[in-house]
Length: 482
Image 1: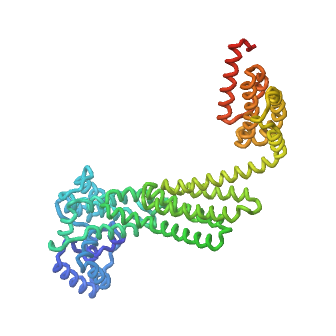
Image 2: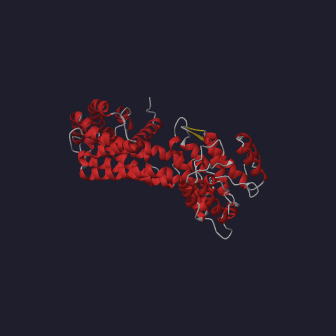
């Protein structure tokens, strides 16, 4: 990380806990020596880090960077803090270039992963060292990097972090942990850009896993950094689609398709980063789904009476299904599903009308036969005793016509079921009236049996079965069953 390599404390060759007087004296001495062209090197430069060049300008810049207390503490977060024996021993070894031994010493002091007041400086130093050796040119040692970030998160989350701040600053000054965490994370994320989601770098998911160890305000800050641009892009695309849809609703389908395509990667990225349970993700996903649905609705309303309306309806339904795939909340999903169902019903009704047109002659033929039947309530006794024969003839004429209608519309078609039930109901009514008039159930046996193979709605089927069973019982008692 650049703030480690060019850290003001490294350039000035002073410890992070140096007092203002010590800092001023060092700056004055270094400036004079720099102006004289003297060699300015310290054993704390650490040979494994990039060369540290000291000039009058760089010394002045380093001085300015740690002039204010909050800046001093911020830059201290990116340099070593020698506080106890472990720190002294490890830093001494580090000056000699033994990185692995230094790593071992600091790692042992925080075995178990817990950071407390006793080992806070050890954890901090280990984090700085890991981060300082993680970046090598175009490659990132992801294991070093993640360990370093996790340790930093534990340091920030420790109850002893404030005491660390007080040790760096004057004890009367109060550090602002939230601000420091955000500044540290901002620097970390900036330095990570060249390596994020590359073959020689680290994945976004791995970075997010590290953030779990930071205080809540830090996690939220970093998360917002990751999602700001994709969310902003989605919002912009939604507004663009809305404007285009309003200006040219006849092209609303294309605007909806373009919208989904343009934000596809952003939505998938946010889903991975935030998860569908995130309120932030739900809000933007539902807003996107709403606009896509509106594009579908506007297009459907404009194209419903145009040529190739079935193709338009199919395109509309598919666009609405795309909106459903994005939506998260139950309210939005229910609204979208309602529109999909409406479009599907419209398609079925349109198709049904076409099919009915094919068999309209047969439908009219059946209805004509129904209309030709006598009004049974006003029949005389003589006319009533002829009803079984009339019922048989009526069913015989209608049955083959109904079969043709069934072949085209399908046996489960609602209209076909109603038409067939109409035939059954009329024939059944004539049979029942005959039996009630003559008390002769055997006279309608053939007519009743002819109804058995016709399709019926459940209510008519129940009525038919009930009357059939009643007639069978009467005939059995009278010994008329064969």
